[in-house]
Length: 222
Image (cartoon, rainbow, N blue to C red; front, side, top):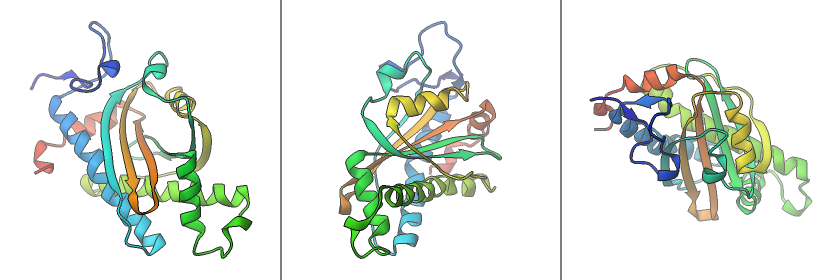
């Protein structure tokens, strides 16, 4: 199939305008990217349940494939505060995973992590809460890419999580300064038992990332 702009079929605000030189991928790859964003949540669910020893459900609320640059930040990303962590991917898929929570959900998520270790959650310091949330984000990011590592039959190296707290737009802007690809996969998810909402962003760092995914046929979805 002739390659089309990768944002075809996505939100109008993220669609490239005629004549620009943004990255293009085959339409088949869009389907694979959507599938990756959706099925990777099972890896997140597995990691959370392994650590919390709970029968929690992690549901995918929305998967989006989009393109962002410094000029389109205002139209695509929120200005409200988010807390979470950023995890660097190195080999063989270079990029960043950004896991964020609305502030209310961040507090609930940190409490969920600490409830088995601390009898009185009111005694938890801000630093303890941040560390707990950062560790949860690290588990979620690694669980997310675990499914991809299985698909590509390789180990995906991840760095140490870096705690972040800022408006979503600011967090994304910092990542975009590192990379020129601009492509992102966004999975919004929910842990309904605890009323926790989260967003996982995957930002490929090199075009080789997309090339590798483009080599995956639609048969992987079936």
